[in-house]
Every structure is written in structure tokens, then in C-alpha cells.
Image (cartoon, rainbow over all chains, first blue to last red; front, side, top):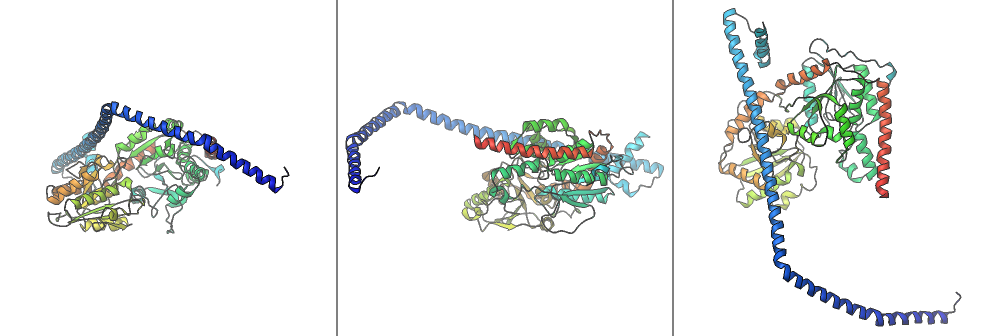
Length: 141
Length: 447
């Protein structure tokens, strides 16, 4: 549109007038209504809180207790798992000791044989594995 | 590469127990993240020392190093360990890198098949395969009928069947169906963790611990006595997963209770920037010190000189083993560890070590009991040292490793196809993986 400056100023003035009117007629009462609504909302919330305060506290306490229980159960589970692994370690240590004892017994048996047969033991047979292997071979004939 | 001239190697173990072993590891010293790579080198040296023919196939080094005859540093490392790349690359770039690192890299498959053809190993000894397209390497070995033994120092199969943290059930199921070999996990919990992800380990499973090396020292005579300065050490990656924050917190609790006759030295790279300022934040910077990276041998020398009384190891539950406390305990440095870590399966609490819940409070309590003299470190330290040198020495464990290797080498295997076909399949798999990751990223963006 080809408006001259005077027309443009008039148009802007008209728009401004409508905006001020809208502010006065619509927005201010709307704000007032909203404030009243919020006041009722707060009052209602207070009433509900007062009415259900005991229940809410109970639920909060229950929630806290459940969380504590979960923590203690987790810790207990971890302790049990640790005990299980410790038990595994114990079993492994026992197995290793049994192997050593068996090795020593084999060695003792071998020494007795040596006395009888006058066998010269090689340095290699000093190792546990080799001793066990020689023992097994002897038993197998 | 001349795959056309590939022939199926004769896999009869050479000269009785002497076998040709192809070792595959993502990293090899001097490139080290943790104990995995150090253990790899120690076993390789041990096997070479026992007369086996060993070739190590690993990635190009992160730093210049002298060539060695038995080392082929020809694989490509798809670097998913670099925090800079992880934090600064775009999401899709990172996903693609993760997929190549875990699933398949055709370049690495090609290098592996080339070595398989030229070296003709009796058995392949696998280590950490994450970062080299491990699933593709394993698939290729299965395809050409190569027998393998896999040292599991971590839940690597799970890592290979995952994209990031998510395990892909289809891959997990396929792994269980096709991967058949000998697994040597360092602890039961490694197996449990892998199986919890839905991955079934089919084949022979031989649980075997990590080890120490060297000569047994004379028994330690001097242990901590109440009133003296209690010297505590920890080493490894300095991050929250290793519980370093708990240790700092425990120091603060001890200080608050009036104990100041202790100090904690922390050796290792700070991988978690959140832990570095903790000593200052808790006001214990006079008691807890980050000492930086220390070479393994230097640290062992410190233990051998009895510079420390306690090795604190408040590591996470999924720690597969933990070589550091074993090394320390071998020299009479008593390990105080979180009760559920991997090494706890091998040492008995209050007999060879002290096990506590993984909390700052629990660590502070046990350290306070030591400081008060309620716990005598001497019998624990002596027992642990004796047991470790007797039953956890590599010389003692090597025969088991050899037995697994020779056993696998002697087992007849049926190749499903030729190396040429294996390589073609790897190329196809790589392209499919790329397309799949990109399509998923597009779908995610659209959603």
C-alpha cells in the first residue's frame, strides 16, 4: 500500500490505541482472575496437605525405609559374594597345598626307591612337575 | 599380499612339545595400558625361552622402538582408547571407529592371513583383540580352521560383541555358536561377566591366574609397627574405576580421626581428570601424592626395597584380576583390596591379604586398625609372599599354558574355506558393518 507519512502515523496511532484498550479491558481483569485462581489453588493445596499430611509423611518414611533396606541388602549381597569368592580362593589354596603334599609324598616314595635301586636323580627331577611325572611313570610300570 | 599361493599348514606339533605359535595382541610393550600387554610379553619371552617358535602379530607402535625378530608390528590399531578422539570426534565417526575396533578390519584380516600362510603356525595364541577388529580375526581363524587358545585377561568376547556399551544379542549368539577353542580366563568372574552378556564360551575353559617373575627374595624382616610412619602405595590407572577417589576420601577420614602418621603414594597415569584435584579438595595433599607414571621394574624395585607397607587396591568389582597387588604382595607389601575384585578369588582374606567393602569408610577402618596395631602385617605379608613365589610364578604356570597350546595344536580342525574366501568375507563384513552403523545413525537422527 502506498500510504503517505500522515496516513502511516494515523495507522500506527490507531494500532497503539487498540493495544492500550486491549490491555485495559482484557489483560488486567485476566491477571486479576489468575491471581484469584492461584490463591484458591494454594488454599486447596494447603487443605489437602493438612488433610493428608500424616499419609504423606508415612509414605516418605516408607520410601526412606525401602531405600535403606535396598542399600543394606545390596551391601549384604556384596558381602555374600565376597565370601563366595573368598571360599573359592580357600578351595584353590587347599588344592594347591594338596598337590604339594602329594608331590612330597611322591618324592618320599621315589627316595625310598632310590635307596633300593641306587638311582642317580637328575637335576630335572627336582621340579615338582617332573617328580610327579616320574612317579606316575613308575606306577604305570 | 599373495593369498592365491596360500596352503593349509601342517599343524602337527613340531618336535614333540615344541610348537609354532602365532601370538596376536592389540598392544605390545612398550605400548602399555595395563597388565594385559605386560603379561603378553612375559609369556612370549617365557615360551621363546622354552624353545618354542613364536611370532607376535601386533599393531604399529605408539612410540619408536627397536625391531625384534619375532615381532611383526603390522596390524592397524583403531584407536578407541584415546580420550581426545572419544570426546572430540562426531558421534557417527566414533561409532564407526568402535565398530571397526570390535567387529572387523579387512586390513588386519589380510595381515593375519598373510602371516598364517607364511609362518604356518601350529596354534594361534590370542590376547586382547579389541581395537584390531577382533571378531573378524577370530572369524577368519575359525574359517581357515586354525586352532586357538585365548588368554582372557578381561571380558574381551563381550567387548567384541558390543557397540559401545550395548551388547548385540545376534552377535553374542553367533559367537557362542562358532567360536570354539581353548579359553584361559584369569578368574571365574571374567567368565561370569562374559556369560551374563549372553555369550556362551564353548570349548575348553582353563582358569589360570596371573603371575610374578624374578627370583624369590629373602623374607622381609621389617614390617610396620604402631607409631611408625605407615607407607601406603597404589599403582595403575588413576581413575574412579580403580577407586582412587575412595582412597583420598579414606585418607581424609583418617586425618579427621587424628591419624597423620601415614602417607599414600599413587603411581600411574591420571586417566580421570576428576581425581587429580581431590587431595587438595579433601585437605590431604600433604598425605596423598600423585607420583606419575613409574616403569614396572622400578616399582618392583621399590617393593623389593620394602619402601611400602601396604598396597591399597580399592578397585571396581569387575576388575578381572589385578597384577599390581600380586607383584607388591610378592615382596611383603600387604594388599588391602576391595572384597569383590578378581584377585580375591586367588588369595584368602586375612590370611594372604586384607579384603574390605569398597567404601572409603571401610578402607579407613582397616587402615586405622593397622595404625593402631590391631592388625599385624607381618604374618599376612609373609604368608602371601611365600604362596605367591611358590604358586604364582610364571615358571610354574608356563607348563599349563604350554599344555593348553600343544593340546589345541594337536586337535584336528576342519577348515570351512580358503584364506582367500576368508578375506573376501572380511571385506564384505566391513562394508556391511559400515552401512549398518550409518543407517542406524540416520534412523536415530530421523527419530
